[in-house]
Length: 112
Length: 114
Image (tube, rainbow over all chains, first blue to last red; front, side):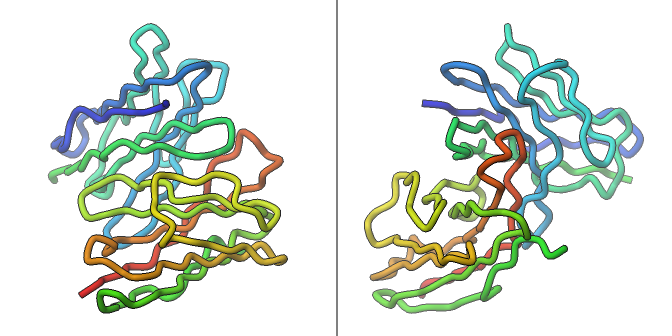
């Protein structure tokens, strides 16, 4: 069975500082990994994905993620956080039939 | 280009009642999945429809059923509602043939069971 874990319930950073949201995964075979963001009372918005190729993946709104096979991690990063980045972030892993398994989510708060 | 649309936005039902939620996929998408997101948790996979057939099912009881129509839209039905069914129900769509593409989510239907 595939799964992801997000070890931090909350991440707090000051605006302008780097932001990292952690995710580790467990799969049999090659991982298909995704990051989504959710604003209050809204659905999930796609940020970026890793299917194959470069370990550093660039996505929407200045976000990027680093795939590390040896550490089975897929951490989300942003070099300079904005107050508007405050939201709930989900890491997910996909199986061959497009079913996503999500982590519990990490609440990011960026203070001005 | 409309994204994934869901209706209604909010719904309040009583225990034991039945509910139907509706979803129209993003233009060009033929695969629809449903997820349940309880408060403070990540979304949980309910089932997936492609070519009007249920292709995968998560760990949900038979009270949860669905349907996909020829125009690719979908319905989620829940019978004999329990208090624990209160959640945000998310619909997601994609093009089955575009294997690397992500799921696109709607804004969800907030179901409250009293």
